Structure formats: structure tokens, C-alpha cells
Image 1 (cartoon, each protein chain N blue to C red):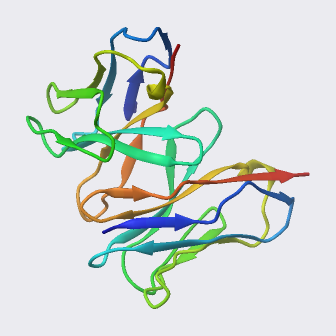
Image 2 (cartoon, each protein chain N blue to C red; image 1 turned 90 degrees about the vertical axis):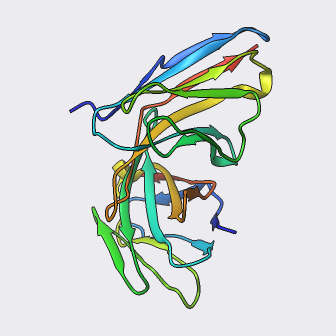
Length: 113
Length: 109
């Protein structure tokens, strides 16, 4: 009964380094999301994927890329990390109508020095 | 467009006090409304939801009523406990989910 699993939980990067945040869900959901959470700003949508093979930009996509590898997995890549990307990142998946509930992973705390 | 505005915190209450966290929204159409809760070090969890006007969502003693006339979805609890200390997010589901900025609640014994 894993739900949404994110790795890693913590990461420290130097400016300019790259990394990929991994996310997988075992609930057979079509839609998956990546959010960042910053103090005083709530959750902001980075990218989402409505179904396998499709991805779309959210509110704050600059500096990120995503891959929907298959129905289960949705990864977020930082090609050249910047201090402004220091944040807590959450992956989520959404159940189908009529419930349409978001299920969240436990988050990745990323610091870019 | 769609947006959610919620009461800024932090909020500190004594145990057994009454809680209200205000939330108003702007939306096209008739979205579903949600309250999510985030405990320290964890992801968000659904607390309650309402899908249409005048619906009341409830869970764990928390309630919120979908008020179309005032575009509001205020969260209430009659008697808070220390274990309710968390960050609470109001959200709406249009074509995507839109979240408020979160309200931190601390309940002291």
C-alpha cells in the first residue's frame, strides 16, 4: 500500500549541478504532478502529466524538465541547479472522477548552494 | 482565472479552543473545494472536500461548507487538540488543482 513514492528525501547540490527527482505511484492513476513548496507561497505547479506520453507546463516550469516514463513514473530533472530552486518538491497523482483526489508523496527537500 | 486566498497565519490556540481558518476562492464554473493538511515532515493529505454549493465536508471533527454566494469554504473545528497542529491548505479543482498559501496552526496544551 505504498501510494506515491518519492526519492530522494533530501539532497544538497552545488550551483550548476544536475539531478533527477524520481516519483512513482502504484494506484493506476493517469494524472501526475510536480509541485514546489516555498514559505509564504504555498504549492506551485511546475509540470503535470494528464496521461502517459503527455506533459504540460504549470505555473513555474523554467529550469525544469519532466519525463513521464510510463503510467507509474514521473520524474523531474534540474539540468543546471540554481539557488532559486532551493525548495521542497512534492509529487502527486490524482484519482479519477468523481473522486478526483490528489495523493502526495512525502517530499524532497532540496538545497542548492 | 482560478485562485484561492486563505487566511494568513500562523495561528496559535489553546487546546479545546474553537478554530476558524478562512478561505475564499475565484473560479470559472463550479469547482470542487478541498482542505488538505500537512503534518511536519510529511506530504499533504486530504482532510475534507465538497463538490457542489451548500455541501458540507467533514472529517475528524473538522467541517467546511461550500458557500457559492460568498465564494467561501471556511474550515472550522469546535475543539482543537494538540495533535491538530499542522499546516492547512485550501484548494480548488478546476482543470488543475489550485492551492492557497497555507495556514500554520499550533495548538498548545
